[in-house]
Amino acid sequence: MSFAAAHPALSRALAARGYAEATPVQSAVADESLAGADMLVSARTGSGKTVAFGLALAARLLGLAETFGPAGRPVALVVAPTRELALQVHGELSWLYAATGARLVACVGGMDPRREQRQLSYGAHIVVGTPGRLCDHLDRGNLDLGEIAAVVLDEADEMLDLGFRDDLEKLLSAAPESRQTLLFSATLPEEIVRLAGKFMRRDAVRVDVAEEGQSHADIDHRAVRVFPHEIEKAVVNLLRFYDPPTAIVFCGTREGVKRLQGALVERGFSVVALSGEMTQNERSTALSALRDGRARVCVATDVAARGLDVPDLGLVIHADLPHDSEVLLHRSGRTGRAGRKGVSVLLVPSNRRRRAESLLAGAGLELFSEAAPSSADVRRLDEERLLADPLLSEEMAEDEREFAERLAADRSPVELAAAFIRLARARLPAPEEIGDPVDRKPGWTDAAPRAKVRVEVDFTGSAWYRLSVGRRNGAEVKRLLAFMCRQTGLKGRDFGAIRVGDGESYVEVAPGGIPTVERLAATGNDENVAISRADGPPTLAPEPARPKKGKFRGEHDGPKARAPMPRPPHGDKPARAKPPKKDRKAPR
Image (cartoon, rainbow, N blue to C red; front, side, top):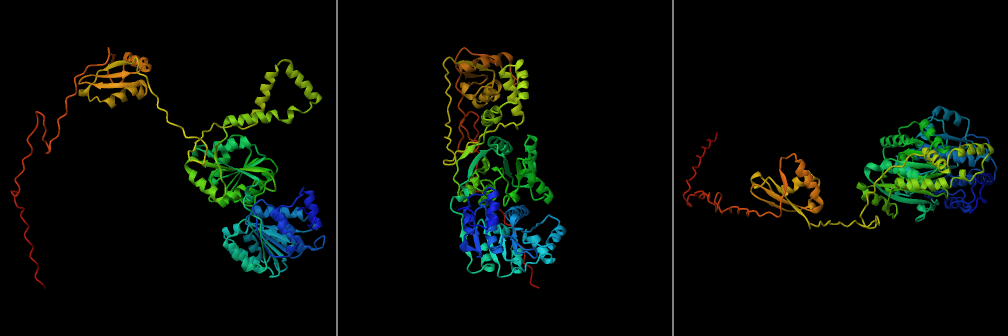
């Protein structure tokens, strides 16, 4: 669907911005048959909801008029869960309604409330804000909702999760009952339905455009296995491998954000951070740097998972596993927006594979894990990008040609190309060497399990060596084998038969280990065991049989056998005297 049926002023604004076709949610909400109706809209993140309710509001607020009249008490209220989303909605509606003369005011936490009070006193047509700050202005008398014609609740499920139910009910109760109410939510849990039933008209229309599989259509989801101690290295290689215009890396904690931001800055990336402890000014500065290209990577906590819209965001990396599948989808939804393609990479530490499988299953994703890009993979792509660089095909200017000829006068083409490669690589962060924890679960990876290979050693041409220790010295086969391995550095398979005598022992050595044992025999060892070459297999007296233990303790068959301990005949044990009974005290 095109935007031909939209309000003329909005249609022109959309055309100037390059919007040609409406998204499914925009087509559904802007349907002429739903003009002025209350709507409960379920649509995935990144589907163009802001433009959608902007189009729906125009029919209610403007009708056939081209522009708004003088600003007074607001006629539309838009409520969003976070400062970032509220400011983003304010910016989107500002250009969409620019030709209508609409005056918009943003009221969000973290900003100067006195400045917002002055702006409200000058009059406004549309007010956009967060629940807490809007209620604060309402309580102070700065905000009058008596003429509100339409209310939009954006990301309503998130506002309820954040505990804003009381604030939402206060705002909706302060607006006239004749208003139009638009409730947008990625999911429609029971609490959302109850809220809609309480504050929306009975004939409210439910619009569901979150079709099965639609949330993944423009996002290439990937699961990358990684060792827990190599997560930072994996992030580095992923950023270098995909080389997106802009990327977001999600961490689970503020400390994780600080640590990863520092690691990426140290490696040469242009990085900003975004977390809840930052002031609004710091957050605005970080987002501005991300949007104008001064920074290409944002390391953030889940505070940025909802509502954040960054142009050309091509890559989302989940450095820490999200808490649940819904957070995974909302994080991933920062990319692949408005018809653009994006990549979402879930890092799966080898010790949290089952947790990752559960998250992916809950999100409806069936993925095979893959190894993180290696340094060789990154280098190969660097070479391909360098060969495709437009600089190599551009026509040279005259001054460039003269300097190129001077450089080529004393240097070969290979030397110049090598210098060019070094300059190109110097601008890029170096890729990391990283391992691959191959997972063996069928279906999770297609890597075949490695078969154990037993190495057979040929003892043809082996040699025997005499050791100056025997049974009298406590020598045993396993102790002698450990001694020989320890002293020579050979494996146990390099030694054959071991025979232990009373005062000496013999060890068979495979042909490959003979030179090593010869050196040991010549240089000696730190355990004072003499080693010498023997003529062949030894002839040792058999080890005397150990005396067998008898039925009773101390009874043996050998020459030193002692008589069993005597026992008294049955019934001859002296009777044990019983203690006398204590006299009972007489009752008082």
